[in-house]
Image 1: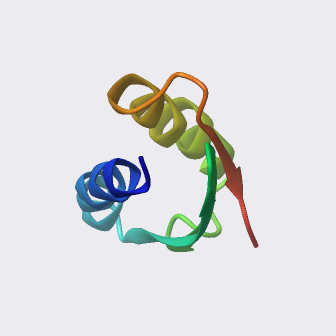
Image 2: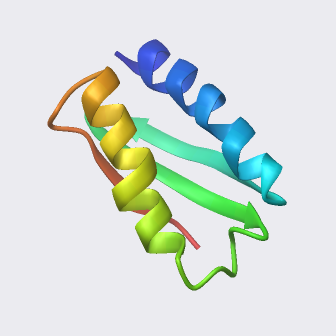
Length: 73
């Protein structure tokens, strides 16, 4: 499952990079994914919306509906 998560995150990175941001995978433990947002996304007031409504939702649809994404500072 980790390989599927990483593949989907790589796909999603292109969208963040288009807006001047990026993401870093801090850890993947079972269905818990810890990410660090970088660049423009790191200080964006909509960062949690990006994580939960965008990245987490995409991972749940593509990989497993029980995945939880957390932000690491």
